[in-house]
Image 1 (cartoon, rainbow, N blue to C red):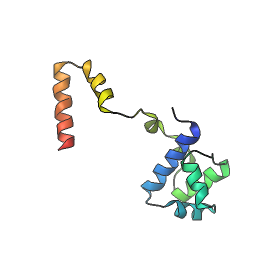
Image 2 (tube, rainbow, N blue to C red):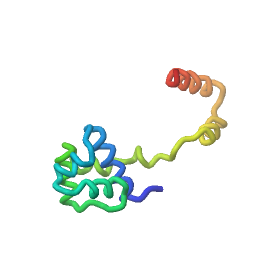
Image 3 (cartoon, rainbow, N blue to C red):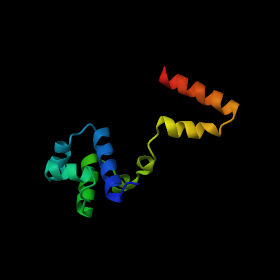
Image 4 (cartoon, rainbow, N blue to C red):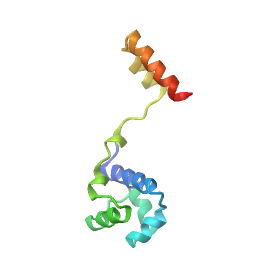
Length: 106
């Protein structure tokens, strides 16, 4: 399980990339070193409240956005975990799942 520092950092990275900005771009807008943005994104450090506020302004998002990371907490899916999940499904569900997967992968 990721720490809160890692989750906030991953969310910061996600929001930054969604805006098409580099770490250097954000660093310039927040008036910090690009290495600091890197350390934040990797969860090595946690931003001060003032830095969070500045990051929110730089990315044009409310500060609460940095704490909306439920989607980042989900476990990684691999073939084995998918296989275990499918074992409990009935024939009808398996057919539906197959159709959806086939449509997505083609």
